[in-house]
Image 1 (tube, rainbow, N blue to C red):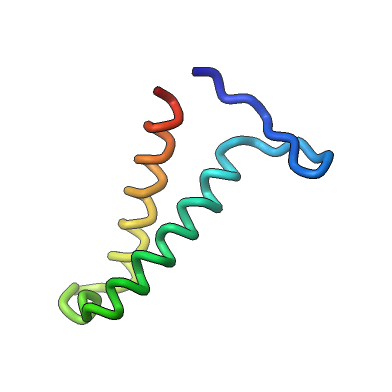
Image 2 (cartoon, one colour):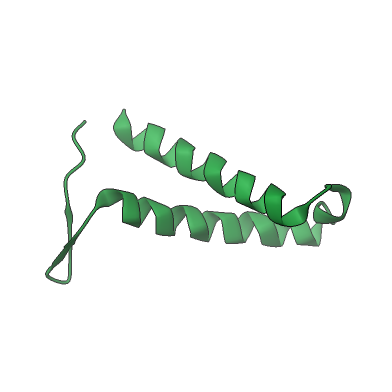
Length: 67
């Protein structure tokens, strides 16, 4: 599949910027779930863990859209 620009209220944006925002929203939801179940207290570095989850979610989104 070819990535094409997305028309957002008359402004063309790159598809990766939309995926970055969507991955951020998913990561916020996952972080809230991790806070609720006390997962972040069991990791060595919570900020690094959250960033890693963000990169994994973003990579999964890009791979899913590319196929």
